[in-house]
Image (cartoon, rainbow, N blue to C red; front, side, top):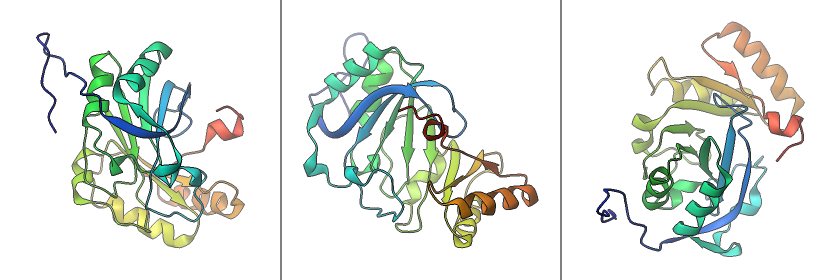
Length: 212
């Protein structure tokens, strides 16, 4: 749904609500923007079903409270981060138009972290695409991708990563990320990146440094 505009030309929040697992102010721990001050909005709901998921508590949206878009925008703005990140769960299960526009109307660059498994919605300065073989990406995601990040647990995941990379411009930053707690995946990725220099390694630095 398209928001009506205020006289100042900014989108007016219509009081929509979204199920929220948590919000917190920290730094981005992965990918291109590692180390950047970020306010995270983790939305509830996911039907992708990754077996190694470290946020399975986010899967059922009924277990989490609904926040109004206005309250989410206010919380993010009060934190004064460099960027706001909408993550999940799988955030594209929800219409992100109002939330993304509301954050931007308050001066925040907005990033999205998604598997791309549902139709694209919202407006973002950066889209981290982390496709999963358990649920194929929707075609609408590919024109929106800013970086590709594939979690690797087995050699088959490397094949999946290359298949997804082939659908994106060659200039797209491409990351392989070890599955947390799987030491074999680190060695697998390290050997692969040495032979395939168009890929980079993404580490979950927030876990190594034990920050939120």
